[in-house]
Length: 123
Image (cartoon, rainbow, N blue to C red; front, side, top):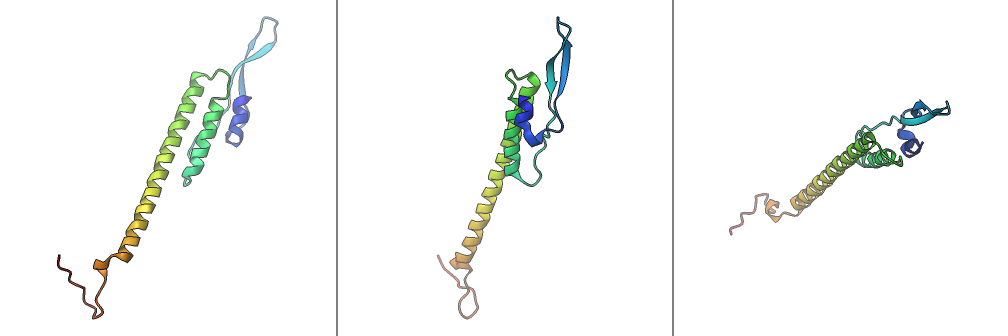
């Protein structure tokens, strides 16, 4: 139940369990899984990072995570890193564009003389 609780809305359906008959003849859950949506959020890198964090929490929720749980947690961590890198790149490009636009408006070499001709500066 811990992975289901941690997955929340990312869980697609309820948990499924593996049962085994105990020495007393009763059935006991000895394993199980919760299917979760682990795809990135299209067009929203910040939401993808939040989702990846939630997937990791769900995968690491069992007291003794299985190798599959650890693999899912690792894949979610990688998804978060990719989204974070893409977001950083987008922000850098936006800043570069703002600087370029600002410099274009303040570049004295692009100004025209009052007569309409370009000022010829000699270095």
